[in-house]
Length: 511
Image (cartoon, one colour):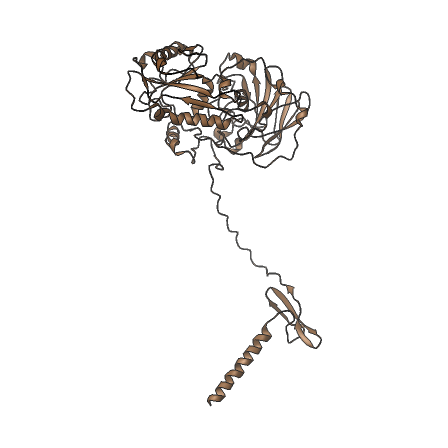
């Protein structure tokens, strides 16, 4: 009985094995009925007669059966970075603000609702390029045709540009009077703000910049009272009625400080007070129009006077610092006029350009006059003919062509530049980006009969010149030209024919 059971098991096992072997479907293996089909490994096989045998043919790839398409899985949202974050409104706080300036931003947002940039966004141009070719350099006018060679000479410009044989030296005279003994050092009160400004200038200049600020380790005592000078925050820094008071303060401090400071290498002199001085006693002031005389040399350059701009808790706090300090530097060096118009019918450049409201980066025109943009970066359009120009964003890193100038006369010009989210323009909302067109009258700039006039941003007539969400904070916010839009001014039509991250391609033709 035992032997019979073993035999049965073997027979059953062999039968199962034979059945499995026959069930394996592949090209050339045996099948049992002509025309039979079978699907295996994604192929459909048919049983055919090959000689005296029945075998599976080579098979054909079986198309997948139509299945109801699954709902697409949403891609993970791209986390914005400090370089890619897009602002809905210029006044929105910056989530990537450096930690040291966070309290400033919060305070300015609470007090005035519109904090300025507290960082500079360095961006490369990238590899993208327009499809439309621009006019060859040989077709352009020489750069002299786009300059007013007889314009007022401003010596201060030589101090902030790259065309100098040695660094520009700013000598600080740190002082205090009988309004409280300082508990801080000049470096503690001023180093961060100075670094912010000098780093910004270095980043904005495509031609190089070398400015050094020299500052004694401690404050110098002057036996006097700041109240006597009446230079608190109720006195505007450009108020001509305070000129005597400013020079009185400077001469009073210099008389005490001169024996202990060597001014021989200095190009400009600043007079800075400690953090325990309220801005109601001393705010930022600019002393101009006279010579500062020391035992080593005399200075024709304007001097800066201020209590600390790096203390947001100070009474009379200037909330837009240290960004506003960059704006003031251009006045201190007599390099730039304000461009905000007369606040009536003339809006000047509106919110465009740092010298009109100190909200964004400097105009490419200003950078050219500062020496931060070189002549080779300016395209001087040919007269009386059509031309095409690829204008790179004025705030990207690198010595690219960033400014288009159209000469009208010896003193009048049209300028075009491309605005993108880089530099101090990184907070500008995307709908405001494009090419801005503005007229320049150097005769008005030189005379400055009405302070703030001489440069005017133009607007396309096809739409409002105010981008609604920004109207209150940024005049002329809708001025930038987009693809297909144009502006006609002073006998020329300026159109944007192509646009991208690379900037704007601009067509200039006779109107």
